[in-house]
Length: 565
Image (cartoon, rainbow, N blue to C red; front, side, top):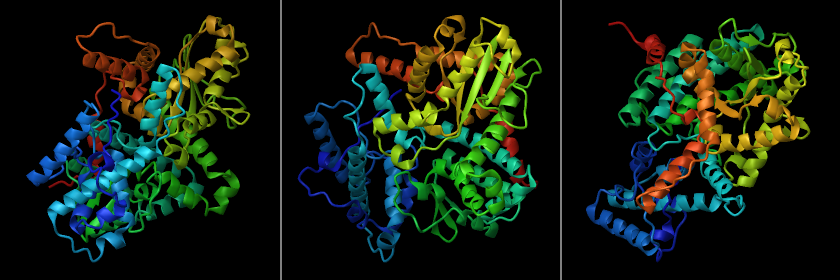
């Protein structure tokens, strides 16, 4: 469901007090509370005003302030003090001011610690709220809801979407194992890539691929244990394990719109043998999502590779993301001989679809988009800026048709009987076509993104395909992320029709507007309406499909670190 909770601000609860800078409140908190709070605010449930204080008198006072604020403004829903994004802002504030806040810190009052932490969060909330731009959303009622859904979720989509993000964390961990294995396979595939791999491994303070995989696997197992027990601290005595973890620790954390420095250093050290999580998802991302930037840094120093392959992102997105990761994964899904695919060529032709597969008269056309969104845009919470960059990345970049534009071009070529990659379709007047946009960043699996891109696809189809829309059964646009394909791979392999049925199920939900005709009261009416809107705007990754995560395959990953007694 769309669950946007109101964040409480300082002025809401302490209207008669002069607000101070965030750092001022944090400077009154003890060193131990500051360091341990960073991990603590990753636990579930996230602390709120009604369970923030251990002192009963302070608890009652603050609760009364909140109740008064809610009553005066006739607010019925429970507000929030701490959220995933405010917890990260707090961590960033502490770690980027460690010298001022942690050294020579003599604060030792638990009551003062809790109150000053509480006030710091209220100030952080004000900063986040002030950054949102809400005066340029669409005028139409439903499009306005889409705008709000994107504005409120897109800037922080790197975090878990759900309040209880344990399942999302497990899914991310499962998919990351697959992607890291693919990345290492790619770097081993050609001799001139080996130096990149070796330097990449050294950045984690390991010397061999086996050691890297073993240390990563052990860490992932520890993260599963910590997440499952709602913990965030662990002790490490092994010298090699400490060196590995220390590669992800930094005392040089500067504030950044997109938490870039925390993403690069998602673990911090409390004591010599004691480590803590900054953010669970960012630790997993360190091994693949953030790894891309480390490989870019190394690539820029390799004059031979640069001379032969040019721009890093062109090289990585084409050679690895498209021709290695995507192709091998889709080949696993469409492994049967009766699936017709485009012929493989040494050099790609102009306008060639990234992946094409057909079974009888059903055609699946894929465009692979491993794209990045500038952190300034992502953090802007401005729908005009977000829409503009989505159009550049997924519709048309200057004069070049990309993503959606390229999918429509492929369908146009099929309809004109001049398709160069499968002669069969040139003789058919009736086909069912599934356009699929494959993305690699989970920020594109937030509420409203697929819906909006599908609206643009429909507009392009009407404008460019004409009567072809009547002759062919052209399905709506499915935006699917690489992690969901990896997660659902075993399910897709059970029956060939499962892939098509998942797409159909998602498209049916996205294209159907459900109304609430009756309800016993207004509260239930709003609840049901919210459910229906969320169902329509949800990404495919949040659809309920009849699959179970392949736990046997996941547990096999950990055999490398399980020692026989």
